[in-house]
Each structure stands twice: as structure tokens, then as C-alpha cells.
Image 1 (cartoon, rainbow, N blue to C red):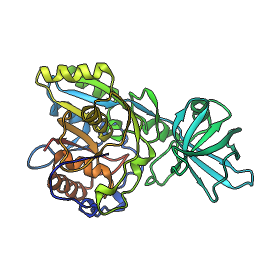
Image 2: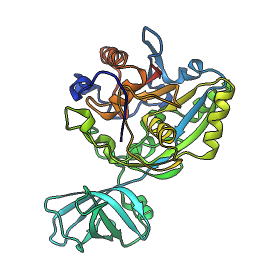
Image 3: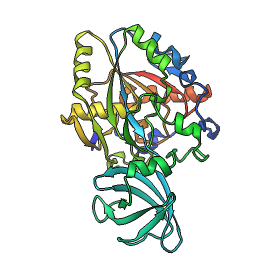
Image 4: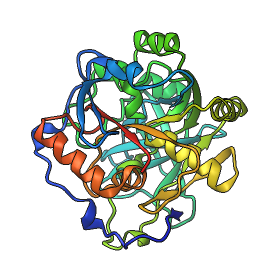
Length: 347
């Protein structure tokens, strides 16, 4: 669902920029809070380090994190004919069933049983959610979460060029991940470590959590120049009552709600726009959107022409965001999931 209002009509090309490929981070910074932070709140950008964040927030502010946990959702196997097969599990359903993307030379028919690495099987039940859906429904021969934990691979983004390692299993996960279900990390939260969280609490900054299970659709390219024609992927979210109470308390004491990452933004603004504390969201935030909850945003640097570029531009202003990206490229910031971060104020 697109949520915007009366501004000039932006097109896909408006969100393009030239990014030197060497700025795409292939590995995380040695220390989580040692990554760079571009402070984009004032007229002139300020280059900082992420562990400076407590000095940039005020006592009484509320940081809201996405506490989803990345699952080892990439699985490999073979068809009965011997052809190679790769699954990327998007969500787990009851009855040992999963919904997954399937990469294979020739799609098998419903009823086919695949032998998966690790010694379990996956029976193809059909497409999902409809007969012409882009995803596929499978029944595993065991409990899906246990099988993925034992035999799966970390679902690194397509622009990371190496296979997953023990470092990725540790670092492509936030320190407060609690609810398994994401196939991509809420990357702005990767910069937080326990020492930084302790410093923030000591400063009087409050914290709360939401859950949004990030789907592979977060990397889905926008294929239409008219961005209003793009259909957003669905992701499951939940806003706990304790977080709603924390937001109300923050407002009462004059604090600011600081969203850690675009997934937190999508969750909070979906709740505000549609009144549901739990369910699927397809919210598509483009310039002109009226934010109701989020006052500040911590976010990584996003892909050209992506829906996340549109969301950030809707938050801080298109011209400002494009100028900040130009500064980040000039100053050799690291981009995307394992890259650096920026702090923004609402336009």
C-alpha cells in the first residue's frame, strides 16, 4: 500500500545515484559501534563515529529497536532428477510448512519431494499465497526452525559477494535479536553493542522494541518508472502494548521517538496509519507521507532506486537526503548492510 500525499510526482530515476562499487561493504567494521555515523540533522553534515550517539540524544528520548532474529534461511538440495535446488525460506507456517523462494533450473511440479542437504526432505505443495504467487509452499520432514539452525546458511544480501562464515553468523545479527523470522537483518541496529546500550541507559535514553520479520522482498528492485505502480512485499510485524505505553510516556515527558532502522519506521507508521498492532504490512512510504510517530531516524545507506531511499527521502526531505548521500560518497562512507549509518531529523 502506497502512503503519500500532495507533492511533486517523483519517478524512479529521481532516486538514482552513482555509487563506486568499492564503497559496498563486504564485511562489518571490526567493532559494532566503531562504524562511522553521518549526523545529518543540521544544515551542514557532521562526520562522527557511531559510539558518539549518546551525545546526540537527550535524556528522555526513546530508541525503538526491531528485535527480529535472522534465521539461517538459505537451504540447498536436489530434485529427484539430480538438479540443484536452492530455497530461501520467507516464513514458517504451522505443520512443518514453510513459504520460500525457489531457485532451480526447471520448476518441479506440486507433489515433488526434494532431498535437502542435511538429510531432510522438502515436499512442494504449490505456489503461495495464490496459485500464481511468486513464492512456494513446502512441507519439511522435520521442524523448520531446527532444520534451518542445523543445516541452513546465513541469507546474506545479494551484493555481498562471499559465502557466509562464522563471522557473518555472529555479526549479521543484532545483539538483542529475540524473535526468529527475518531473512535480512535490521541493519541500522547492527551498530549497537552492549557497552553502547549501557551508555545510552546511563544518559537517560529509554528503549523499546517492535518486531518486523524482514523479508527478501526488501531487496526487490522497483521496475516501474512510475513508483506508484510498484507493489510492496508483505512483512509481518507486531507492536507490543509495552512499546505503545513507552511512546505515550515519551510524548508526555517531551522526548523524541528515535526509530532504529527503516524496518522500525515501517512497523510504527503501519500501526499509526492502520490501527493494527499485529499483522502483515505492505506500507510503501514515499515523499509526501505524513509521519505520525517517528521524530528521528538512524539508518544505513541504501541502494539506488530502492523503496528505502524513498522512505528516507520522505522522512528527511528529498534534496537533503540526496545531498547527504553525495557527501557520504565523497567522504568514502561504507554502504549497505555492513556499512556505516546516518542520523536524521524529520523534515
